[in-house]
Length: 195
Picture 1 (cartoon, rainbow, N blue to C red):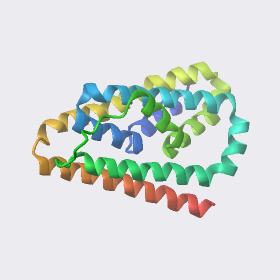
Picture 2: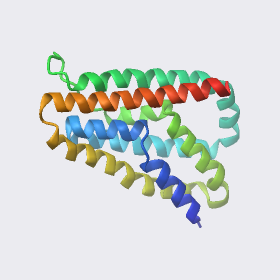
Picture 3: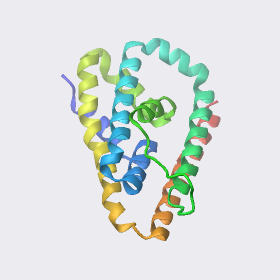
Picture 4: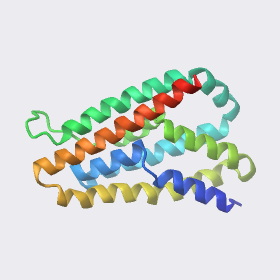
């Protein structure tokens, strides 16, 4: 049986700001709740796949992570900076190509380069999978993660109605992009200190 610390840890890690939640809120603002759902379910599925991978192959994963932690962080942070640029440009009315929300597959694949997601699933696998069983942890994780990320997508959708004026949406997108850049800088700084 999963103990209260599992519920607390997964909920806190799922609800606090991070790359997934910033992207979900931004997508909700720019594309609405319904068009954000594929990305949301991609994030949920991607985290579930990460959890399964981390739980089943923990020893291999930890050994591998030690050798590729810095390159994986650099790749992930590079992708986050690219996403920051896309977020910043999302509100610019002069764009010729209409931006589109991230797809289900994009949400799944993004988890491979999301350091916060790797930290979360590795910790959960280390602390709970062995004593509670992989399936119980996987189901509990998904059940806790889903409402947390739904909140971010819905928040973005609600803000969308208040950000119909171009300069307000651009200001929001700039704030989200800068938040993602700051998160990326913090992750790179930590990786370089540990590397």
